[in-house]
Length: 88
Image (cartoon, rainbow, N blue to C red; front, side, top):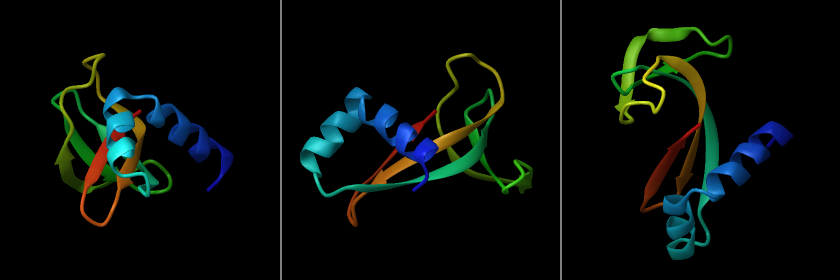
């Protein structure tokens, strides 16, 4: 992982839900993904140039705190059994 991704990992670890998750799943790993988050809380995949991929909604994330559409990084924490996603 490159240093910016490691920084996102550290920021994500400070979230109370992630802390609880990591207490239960100490062997959890993560990956980082670029996405587009809409004001309605829909998440779209983007390519390496931040272009939305075919307008395909990949999941719901809840409405963003600022109420605006924006591109962001997503940190996915997971074990083989459980997933947790943190949006940044």
